Image (cartoon, rainbow, N blue to C red; front, side, top):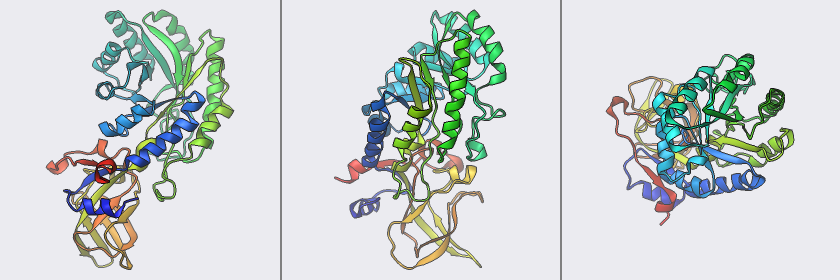
Length: 386
């Protein structure tokens, strides 16, 4: 993953920092283009996963659109050069101001998540003299078999409209003259490694599309959301997910109408493996039964382990000594500021460099200023390879 020249360059940089392997990102995007875009699928990158401009530049060059969940994300996408007709806007709690931002830019689609939101959108669009393009987010009640904090497609999740509300939706839509229903939208969860939940999703989509047609609504597009996961345990063995199987699944199982578009909103699967958090060892603290490796990166730089017990592989970049057992912990005054417990690593000392892998998605974007910590910088393989 890291060349000797890159590791040498790290010694001249203030830690902690994010490092992005742009060559790996390009290879990942090539897979998305080969197995997704070339088949006519439309892929929107979930900008909530990473809004770094250098990352967005390559994603734009590859021909992807953007999936946003806030007004500021819409503005960031526009600033990064994405066309408004490439932008989908999801989110269960859109403010009036955020809706107006989307209307002002004439974005591709508002993914509406409740009947009341649809009503508000209709009123705001009417006041602005515009017609909003709308995709209704439906909750298909599909179990994604992922962490409870990142499942989104069950009946009791806060996202989407449950199918029992569909009769009311069908009654209301004809009275909303400033929205144009163009599609239906789904998202069942994140970090989904098995393909079976997506097969179940296709079955639900097919049935729901039949129902919409029976009620007189023809759909221009189906938006399947994202959620495809990555291998956090062995990132070098699987530097990007199996996109071929993923996209072929939908080719095989979706019952599409003529000229109907299929859209996806992938984030982690595109950017996750290209980013690492580089940190330096501050202290080795020997407890009664535990060796603590205290590093200068913490939950302020990568909150996933503290937030929902996520596991990131830790690599030691500057030691090849025999292994010892360590808890790798950060400097923040919280017991949850722990990256790994009881893992085998080459014996490390103060000043060694470690890399916390698979941090290209939901890493830098979720960093905070807790403990008045400085926001860390990002560096790129294109620059450090020179």
